[in-house]
Length: 316
Image (tube, rainbow, N blue to C red; front, top):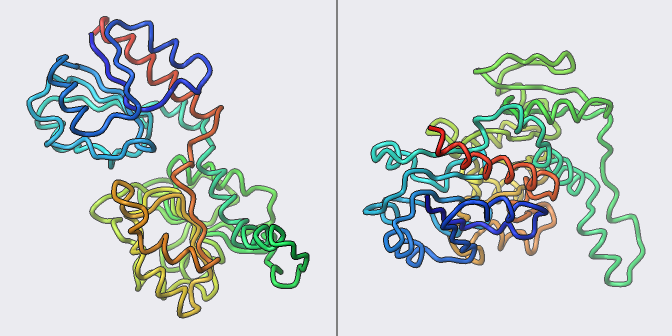
């Protein structure tokens, strides 16, 4: 069995040691696409271990064709860094965290970050800190909003939507939820239409996977129906949002702010992102570099689970 690991794991306690128990492991966290293609073919690699947060390229047909890969094991729930259609057509299995509900329901890190983004915008934390670093001490420009009494919208009531709703208990907020595919089993939540979530919410959390239906769900029409001055939080995928429409709405004074852990093209040059450029001069946009699941506790637990899956290969 030959494995190539293209995501860093040595910083996590006990994770690399788990990986070393297997024969023929290639540890290449900084490898580029061309080098990986050569490695896969030269050493007839059968198993690839990855995570989208450090992966700078998509695992697509160009890379996977003419290789001996049997399994791509990704330590993530999102799969937009992998050409799933090609894998299905060519009998390459894709393993991900989303198949183990007990595990991922105990990984709240991404939902927790969404609260940090919300608080950063509601309380103007980044710009307040910038002011202090300049030697200023004036609270008046940074008067914000309290959370208690707000209406919070959650679009997508899967794992992260449920965790977000649970975390909101005790905050004294009204919670509106929209998800046509699952039951809303939280007595603190009100299930309603997408339009009502837009119209009533002071803060909207996006907790969705990217599909043909949800791609650029948040565009001009969506935003124009949102409550004036409301805030949008996205810790899912950048492709859910039309970033030009977000920028235009903030410029026009309708959208109050956008807090995001993702951008539309994470495999391109971040310097060319219009949203990133806009954020340099606009405090109503807060961006983090896809760190939602990046906590010591969450990463260690998830990576150990994913690596342990290789142990079942010889039993199949």
